[in-house]
Length: 186
Image (cartoon, rainbow, N blue to C red; front, side, top):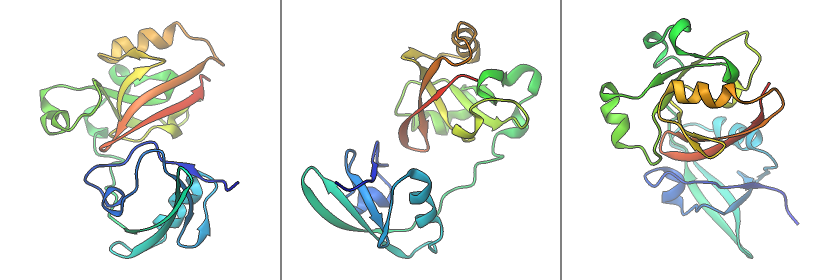
């Protein structure tokens, strides 16, 4: 059996969907190189120039497919929201992030939400123990361990009832893709 990466979600307007990639597909090779984890997949794609095409080998059920995908630009959102937050009012210590409540000022983003989420990751906080490496600026947090997140205070309240080592599953929207982040609370 081949090892690979299971596709959780596909941006309906992105190059992966245009190439024919579907949720549930297993990517086992990109550009002729084996893919055994997400970091290897990201590295294979990142080293290719924007606009070039890349061969992607997938398993869909029992069928082997070879898809051709165009490399698209990935927006750099690392500091996009950092100037809108302060450590005092926006810190979510357990996650090692600064977060914002979504409001009308994010109207364009709200129109593209695919999950009911109301907390936006604005930035990662350096020096705090925590899973901040799992998050990216611009992620929208929709739920933690199945509990809907309506605002930062709700998020903090859920996390305050948890202890170090507890398993955490966070439902997010990153760009137009849905994902789940799983880790243990530090």
